[in-house]
Length: 211
Image 1 (cartoon, rainbow, N blue to C red):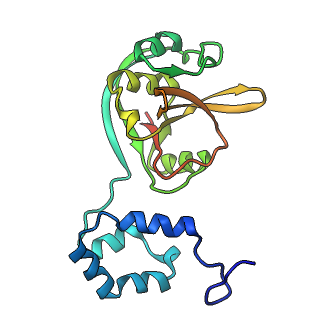
Image 2 (image 1 turned 120 degrees about the horizontal axis):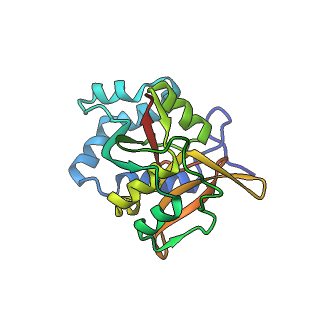
């Protein structure tokens, strides 16, 4: 039987409580005491959070506004096959289905410098939600050639967070999969993950401004 809070709603789960504790575990003692004494946490608990704009809240608190993404400038060579780009990326492990038959070269391949954007939303997102937010900002999802080019020029970036290219999808055993750069138990990996996966709050998504 689930324990309920005021209003008949289910109470916070142990997992949610652990996340809250982790959020504050490196906070200095004096600042933590100030937060607890201010009553702000109680106000946040009682507020209708869905009606609060985070950037407005940060502005009231005197904090800098969040950047929804970081930009990186580098050269993308679409004239190379994905096999060549995987070799140049020197991954510790790569999915054997990352091949030219599953991820062919773009039409009219070219070599050009591009500004790549890493979108970060700080919450769980579906692929469709990510693409919709990119579209609102005037961006398209990055393709696998752009992802692999990033893996070559910034090989350690994927150790910090998973990076996903939603612009290239291959069909494997009835599932639509996309390429992901991340850190695995064996080191730097190039994986394929189901397009329908709900992505975690730490993921970054490759985007390119629409021409």
